Image (cartoon, rainbow, N blue to C red; front, side, top):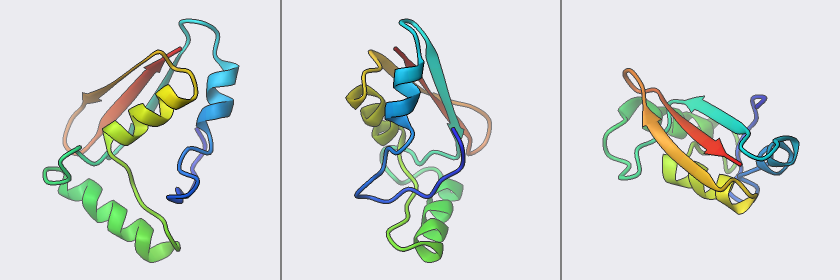
Length: 95
């Protein structure tokens, strides 16, 4: 996925196209400082979300749950979050 600014009213701009381009059992990986679902653990991700809001009207970062929901809305049958090192995580979607 190319870098983009998320807006709450259009939070999944890349997922429909990404899903359409994947064959059955194809995968997509989103790697980011994803905010934890409780919005209480990943201070770096929360600061990045605040920065997005300051730099762009309506901008925000998202939780792993948000990303998985967007993936499922456009046809990925499976999605999961894997915590990596430090503040980084990845969301894996399988079509």
